[in-house]
Image: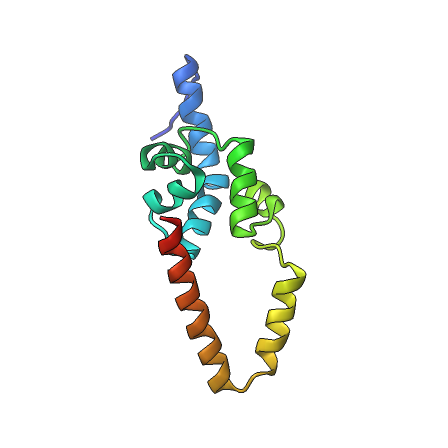
Length: 131
């Protein structure tokens, strides 16, 4: 079946643009959210918007504004280049992160597991405090 789509009006244009971007920034946004283990409502809280508004962004029906791009990049240490273009590493590595990884690599496996356990508990506590 041959499909020749003709853009007839603004709505058709928006739908075709939505299909074009779904595999790009929207998918990367979803990947970031899932990486941190958040559902849409939890991730939306960090942005200060409703789950419905976030869903519209993640599904390509609303654009991701510069404001939210900055918030995501700052809060989650996401590379703006990655978020916007898909190029480069997903996360920005700060000097503190590099130092932590250096120390982690020098620990024996048993202490590495212990450090991860502490980090998970600290993250859970932080998540509860931010709710």
